[in-house]
Image (cartoon, rainbow, N blue to C red; front, side):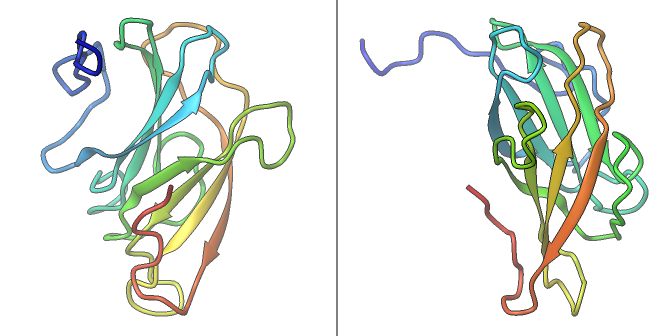
Length: 171
């Protein structure tokens, strides 16, 4: 029948060939965004938020870039958090980096590598839980099919002081 599910592939800490380490309550998969073909293999890739990841402190958050195979399993991945992925932005406990995310195309015009915007719902710049959005300018993706890679990023923070809980949902 048209519109029904033909097949499926789950990606988790135990399925889909995903080798990343997920701890209890990391909330991997709370946000997901299509980002196009990042590694040049003609297969779409995705970014997955894990907003309660504890790298560097409690609930600081992380995002995972998943380079996919045509069957939906993970070919390789990169993690970006306060301790991985060459991310030098300051994340504090309870920031929830990755609670929302989206590809924003090649914002800085560096050759077609999609950049990302990541919501940080609990950021306290200017007051309690004001929130922020980080623009992540990405370097070229890995070209090998190793099980773990790192992607270098440069960061810029944008915050607001008008609305509480800024950046809860990005489209």
